[in-house]
Image (cartoon, rainbow, N blue to C red; front, side, top):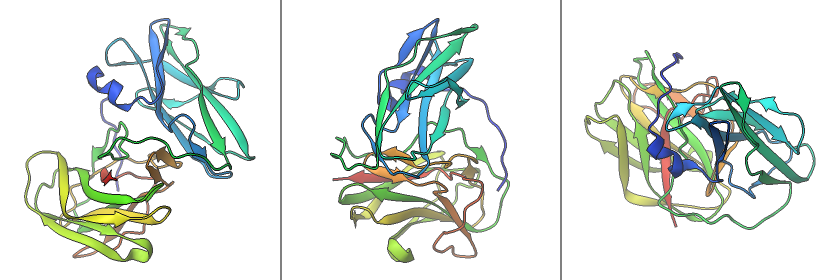
Amino acid sequence: MVRLRGPVAVAAALVSMFFCTPVASAGGAWTGFTSPNDGAHVAVGEPVLITGISGVGEGTSAAGTEVSIDKGPWLPADGNWPWRYVITPTTPGDITVSVRAQHDGEWGYGSRSLVLHAGTPGVLATVYCPCDPRLYEFPVADIDRLPVELGTRVRLDRPGRLTGVRVMRGVYRGPITVRVWGPGGVLLHQQEEPTVTPSHLPIAFTTPVPVVTGEEYVVSYYTPEGGYVATEDFHIGTLIRPPFSVPRDAGVYHYGQGGGFPTESWNASNYSIYPVFEL
């Protein structure tokens, strides 16, 4: 598992697809949240990944991003386009998160606040599906060429069906095996996928996989020659994008001919495979 850094360049037309709260703009810089959703319910003691995008104009990264918790001091976020910040609730109650961006030495006004409910039950967020838990990412090609199964751990906040996966392929574009694993590593679904040309690949399951609330599932694919993409330091906290909850260290792998249930993790890596959910 090897990490390299790639360019940060994204089409501005994609921005509106990911924002769950309106952006704030001042001093030429704008910013906003991509996760969690406003009003999300989070667990006390569990690190929660707050994410967003800060830019200038159409698709240029801002110079800096800062986050404020409960109107406290402004603290630097990790990155700008995208940016990330981890908070760990210590007591039950509401948490208010604000964010601001910098351009040309000037900080913009704080965004409309994101409110999280820690340690309290709540109403399920409205979802529009088919949906998946993808975020902006800039994965890099890994030099690994060993046979390996790569996956993502997820939980669902409501019953439904997994109807497919979205996979970003690396240099290896040959046949792969896609799998869904249930609680305890029980194999629920498997299908072979042929050689492909595109790097982004939506795969529809031949048979949808029913899922229940609160149980952990793993979606994975086996590549016989490595050649995948990876993003390290990605799953550093729980990602909440209803109906999905993606835990810390959600990216998992298993080496060996033919693959198998992936349980190992490496530097909070993400292997760019995402389940598609439908009600």
